Image (cartoon, rainbow, N blue to C red; front, side):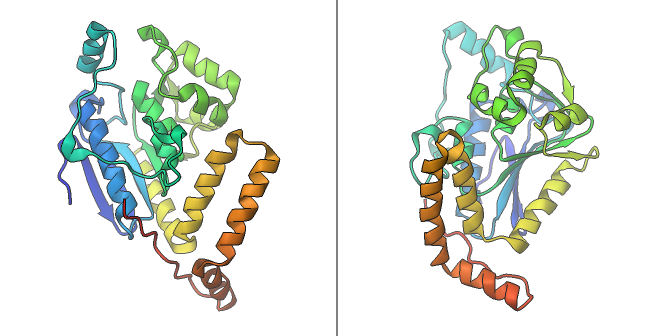
Length: 280
């Protein structure tokens, strides 16, 4: 398995965990960190035993955003500077080659498998964007989110102006963007940004238990297709979404997973679904 410098990638049972491992910098992101996260998600896609991935941070924080040294370089250059790492080239997910899923962190939406953010502490800037584009967010009570764009003279970046209102509504999204105030777990949960409110120290364990439960009950192909449906149909007319869903439903009726799902129900046993076989 690939060795990384700024993240820890672990697989236990059906669950992969990516831990941003720069605790002294509150897990602030460098170009290398982001490349390693993308590469590790590609590994999760290829491993047939993995049902989904958790993204979290080491120590007392989730992610403080972009490393300030990198921010300084961007300011000096007047543009985003990107360093490429040839040994970490990866293009995970997006089997339809949808142009909406080519950016970062928007490529999270094109992954074939669930991605859950376990928000264990401060979550700001680009770290906030990363968590926002995960499929679900399991947040600890004392953890805090902050957009931090306005105080830096920036706009709502990294696609959050599209995603955040869909999670919390326009008014709450504007509040988060405008005020850049620190929002703790309880309020984030009430707003709808956090899907699970966890006791401090329990977010990773709770997310792992959730993914493990999916592995025991749901077909990986079904998880993949339902994720595809949800994100692709957000901006489509109902009729168009129904037509596509009907086609995909007909396809699913002919797959072995449907027969196994019916048989396991009739026989009152746990299902034995096929794993996803991903080559690229």
